[in-house]
Image (tube, rainbow, N blue to C red; front, top):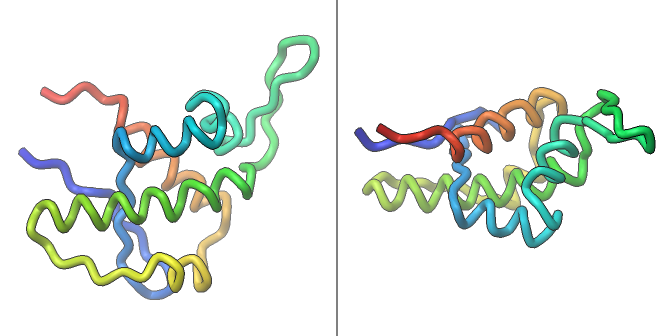
Length: 118
């Protein structure tokens, strides 16, 4: 069974999100570690005492990951032989979803990278 990207609706368009080794590489280059990125995406901050506090998702993490995962989603669909007419810049300009919900969708796509395939 071939896995398909997660689809969300942004700017009135069905947009694919896909996190793969290429997306993880970009994330690691930007954030130093994928764990740091995940904490920022989820809004988790470590205190000096080593405890973790829940805050809100980091907008920079969302704005970095969204176009990366959309581009990978488009590549995945095209590799599967499906047409994907998505303008990443247009979608980013017209993104009309609450940022906390968007962070959740990005995190769901991110988590799928780590699920063992049978």
